[in-house]
Length: 104
Image (cartoon, one colour):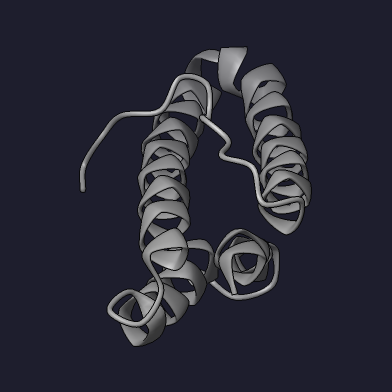
């Protein structure tokens, strides 16, 4: 279930705001039952909220052309970090997302 907290974020590449809604649902359903899901769910949500802010900033920077380069880089960073965090969760290890703002 901890791995699902991270993998659910990949829904954001298909469904608008799916990267936040997916981990939020898994976290809300299982956070009281499993402490590990609570930790991984919070980490995943914090990272996805940080990435949402980064995507918005990159979108706004498209008007000055730098966003055209930054937007794909942020998307690749988000994808790679979610995969790495999922693998670490599967192995039972903690993963600290880089450049993550703590909201929860």
